[in-house]
Length: 379
Ligand SMILES: [Zn+2]
Image (cartoon, rainbow, N blue to C red; front, side):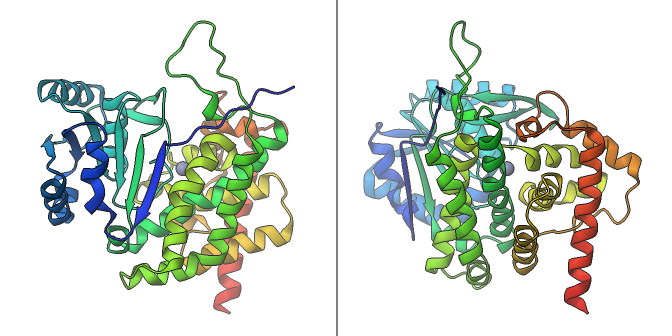
C-alpha cells in the first residue's frame, strides 16, 4: 500500500482582462489587501487596478516591495499588513513578488497574479528565500497553496514572448520528471508539511491524477506551443495562447508539485555554476536539461527527436552554446554533475542509481545531439 498526496490552489481563474475581477476576489476576504508587486509591474496594469478598486470599493495597500524575497523583507511586509489590518495578500508580477507574497501570507488568504507565464511556480505551496544580497537562503513550504491564482491573458499576451517561451521550457520537463518519479516510486513535494513537525509524515508518492496532468501538459506544448508563441509575438490572445498559458502555469504547476521533479531540475541547478548560463531564464535552462535527462535515461529516439524538434521550433535552447556556453571542459561538466547529484537533489528520483560521471556524460551528449540537430536544420 502506498501513501499518496496531491495539492493545488483553491481556485484558478484565467481570462481576457481578468484583472478587472481582482476586487471581487479581495472582497471574499474583506475590504483591503496588501499588494506586493514591483512598481514597474504595477505600472503595467495600473488602469485595471484603479478600475477594480473603484468597482468593488476595496483598498490596495501599496508596499514599496524591494524586489528580493528575503526574511527581512517578509518581516517588514508582515508588519505592514498587520498595521494596515489587511484582509489578504496579493502577489502580482514575476517570481520574486509571488514568492514574497507566499511567505508573507504563510498559507492564509492569498491571491497570486502572475503577469508573465515564465515558470510553473504560481500555483505551488512553496517559495524560495534569498539573502538581501540575492544569494540562495532556503526553501519554504506552507500549509496551503494560494487561495486564488488569477491570470489576465491580455497582460500575458502583451509581455515579451521570451517569458512565455521560457515557461514552455519549464513545462517541457514536467512530464518526463513526473514519469521518472512514478517509475522509481519517489516522494513528491505535495506530501511535504509546512516546517518540520514531530510525528507528521512528509512522505507521499504521486497520484495517477498528477501524472495524467503532466502528460497532458506535454501534449499541449506539442499541439499549441508554436501557435501560442506566434500569437504572443503579435500580442494577441488566441485559443492556442490560452492553452499554453494554462499548460505553463496550471498543468506544469500541478504536475511538478504533485508529480515530482527528477533529473532535469537537478541538472538545471548544477548548470547554474557555469557563468555563461546566468543571463538565461530558469525555463530556458530546464529545456536543455530535459534533453540531458532523456539521454541519461536512454529514452526512445522518437521521443528525443520530438523534444528537439519542439524546442527548436519555439526557440528554446537545445545545446550549451544556446545557453551562453560555447565551450566546456569535462572537468567543468563534472562540477555541474557534482552539484546536480548532492543527496538532497531530485535527481535521485530517477529510477536507477546515479553517478556524477553518468550525469556529465549525459550533458555532453545532449549538447552534441543539440548541435547536430541544428546543423542538420541549417544544411
Ligand atoms: Zn521549474
